[in-house]
Image (cartoon, rainbow, N blue to C red; front, side, top):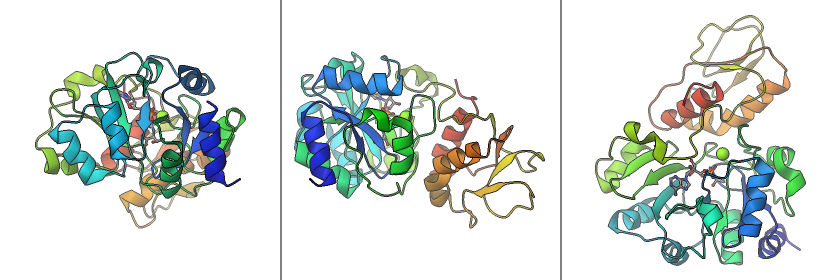
Length: 305
Ligand code: TXA
Ligand code: MG
């Protein structure tokens, strides 16, 4: 049986799979079956109030699960398949069960831009919940080996889709009333605004994104950010040339933010394997995908509430 067929049969049986995507590896289960979805929360140790993203392989299914207005259609047309998740009112709650939505009357939908993910989703034909395949609070896996190390014991199929080329989780945009940028990702605020106009400020509405817990994406060692001059015993995540003489893991020697995003979670894992007393990270520019990188490293350092 091919990797894709094995994953499709596992989903049909209500078992868990690893879902390779362009952002990070997901821990997937069929979205319509609470007995399947509960296994995701249990395997990750994820709090039940944190709703999951429902992945779909075609737009017709997306519009059966959620209500798409003009803004949702325009964003889906511009960015799907791709690293953008849309939060819209739920239409058919049977296709994305209450547990998947954490009881909300909205649903988060995404069509990933990864050929193997699309083959699995289209082969299965229904929605698939897939949070990142790490145990809750740990760095997201961006290779099949890292996914396997985190949650391999819980899955019936772990297809190898190669290394994730984006490396940080999808952008999340809520379209419930005013459009809001809930989670930064590779699709930037400016790119979303170019399609649907100005976004509302999301600062005052932090509580609307239930998953944004602090101390997320965290390795075992404490993390310090914005470090130009690393301390002698640190493992250092550099962004460009450095004269630090201790262990250096380059996020991007040529200071390319996309490359840094793709390397970020693997670099955190690699640094952790060195067992340093502290992991220090170079200052990262905030432009473009830099907003997503800074969001993730602040959380890894425990700074964002
Ligand atoms: O890139 C990604 O999005 C990865 C890959 C595997 O596709 N998946 C992922 O899923 O990161 P997850 O479950 O870790 O992220 C879900 C995010 C959380 O921040 C959650 O709070 C938000 O989406 N979310 C889900 N449903 C929501 C809803 N109804 N309203 C507001 N936020 C929602
Ligand atoms: Mg996650």
